[in-house]
Amino acid sequence: MKQIKITTIEAHTAGEPLRIITSGYPEVPGKTILERRAYAREHLDHLRRMLMLEPRGHADMYGALLLPPATDDGDVGVLFLHNEGYSTMCGHGIIAMVKVGLEHGLFEADEHDIKIDTPAGRIRARAHRQGGIVTDVSFLNVPSFVFAETMVEVSELGRVPCTIAYGGAFYAYVDADALGLTLDTTHCQELIRHGMAIKRAVMRDCPLNHPSGDADLNFLYGTIFVAKQEGAHSRNVCIFADGEVDRSPTGTGVSGRAAIHHARGELGDEWIRIESILGTSFEVRVASVVRCGKSTDSKSPDRDSIVPEVRGRAHVTGKAEFWMDPDDPLRDGFVIR
Image 1 (cartoon, one colour):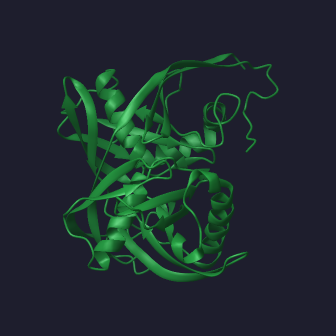
Image 2: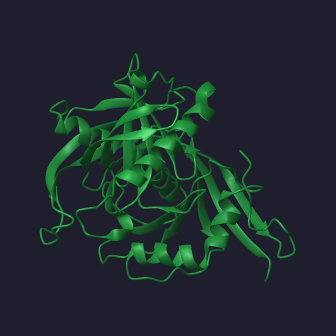
Image 3: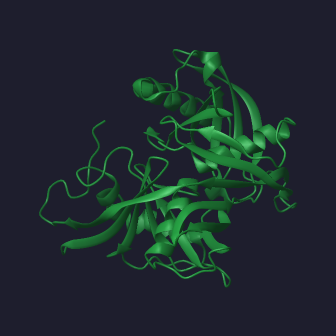
């Protein structure tokens, strides 16, 4: 094995990191982004582990690999990386990659309508500039919907009501106030423990089916705890992948929240502001109402859905070059939490 060198631009969105790979990655073949995701998982996972895990990353690191678009009219494709594998969509990642991509020339696009191919489907983003700097990014997400209301048995918590919703990934939404949980940084370990326990219980008891019929989308990404928050609509804390704690309000998570509130008659096209565990925020609204599905698969019926619009801000923190020494016994990375 030769020494590997990979360069990145480092950024964060509302506190959640994004390590954007700029060079050193091999070609990722595949006609669709989902096919490329499968190839990366099977053939290039040592590079994900190298960049996401210690000693170069950490248990809560997140990354993005920009790719050629998979559609004729697309501007750019992307794969999202984390401590467990590859997600299907990432809102904070879209916001950061648009800012970094435009300001550092990683791709060319009409910044008022940037067409991004993700594993979950087409995202349309818009950059908002002031003085030549991208200050905010908004994007129209994939169709988002409520999948089910369920109850799961969880050790330490008992019977926990969950709303399962999709906003680019499936999440179990849980009322933190009803469980007596505090959504702040001093309670992270407790939130990780309970969030992972709820995730495992839902995975055990509630099979998921995306209305597209694509089995690669049928997995539970995480648990999102929701609480009332003074000065904002509410607070989100997402425990996802293998116990990662999202520092942002979670772009796909607030999209699912918008779908939930719309289904309950609580949200129209007005913006609401949802805070993170850090007190940073995203805004979200219902941009349109659609049907999601193929109408031909009885196991994955069409669903009433919304197209959420999400808005947030990212910041660039630096550039890096990472090396993998083939003789390093820890070259593939490790995690200690």
